[in-house]
Image (tube, rainbow, N blue to C red; front, side, top):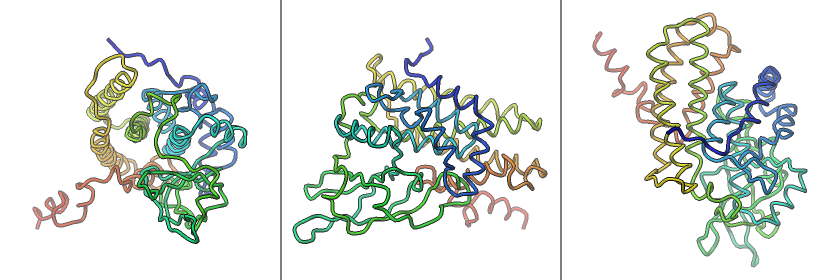
Length: 361
């Protein structure tokens, strides 16, 4: 029996599809600016896409893992940068608000008219805590997306009692250190930023880095990042298959393999949601999706390069969807969760390509 999630992003995906031309134009404008264009972010905030994972009690959509996957996949199919912006936008707001108590959430929402944009390197890289004249100060350097459009920065640290905590500070409390990171995904404002000797007592909020708000449970009882990475990668696959179909490239075997991967990964996420909702006992470790997604990402990168070589006219156009896709995928290949030995060995003595060359010498 096919699982039907009760939490689907139908309204949000429809908004993206109906405004596709506008969104793609604003992504191109964003790339020129090295940050999300104002019109793009205004659209996403007005349609409450940043609240996709926030419960209904706070005006959000309360999407579960399946809906989250569908939303990010659909956005990435339109454009990988758009998918990454939505990945970060809804993911950061959902995660950080799940740490927060009811009164703080309501205050934050009212303060920003609901338009929250958190910049947060959410693999919990703690800053350095120091004591100065009886008070604690935080310094640190991080890298994350949406830095230039953030309403707040979220800064992790380890308290003296060894508990994991986060400070929420206003946008002007941090210094942005770089224009952008990578040759692709330039629209996402992925940069380094820092804070220096900032008093913890001056933070707007100082909260435990633990999903304790009951309204966010059960969906935030475990990590959700693997779902987002899988969704982005599936959306990239959809994009590649669309390009190959458009130019009538032989696609049967590649399409069949990608379809099998998509169905297999979707079943894992469906089973995970069922487990969280308690509708079916499942022995699911969602972190396993990272390894599956690595394999899919690297296969798609190879397929994208083959497509690039098969379409010289598209390849010679630096603004073609194919050229932009290659740059975005190469940039994403540096993400710690997608790095793999096979890619790290490219150009090395033990790479497959090196072995093939030796056969001709």
